[in-house]
Amino acid sequence: MARDAHSAGIRRRFGCAPERLAILIAAVVLATSAAAAQPLVVQGSTTFNRRVMEPHQAEIEAASGQRLTVIPNKTTPGLVALLEGRAQMTMISAPLARRSMNCGKSSRIARAIG
Image (cartoon, rainbow, N blue to C red; front, side):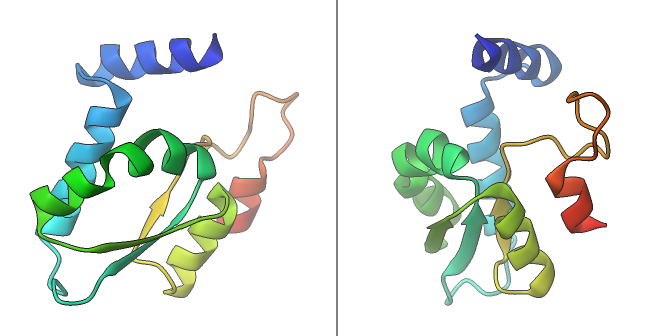
């Protein structure tokens, strides 16, 4: 149910399904990449990987002309890999807000990115 509400919010805000928005963003970023000969490393959320990358990776690679090396781990390690230069893109399925909805406790992601 939460997934449906999240998807509906993205549809209202951007006028398309979250998967299509992710594919569009990835294609634009990859199309403008200067390192087209080298595969781009994408790390992060296993949820994002399962819902977007697994079914659409070939489509993203075809649209962008860029090969991808996908490393599904979790959102936080994906962000850390991006910040440390071990990945060129990250897959995120958690909010980046400093405070989560969980009784005002700081989220793990906010602590990881500073």
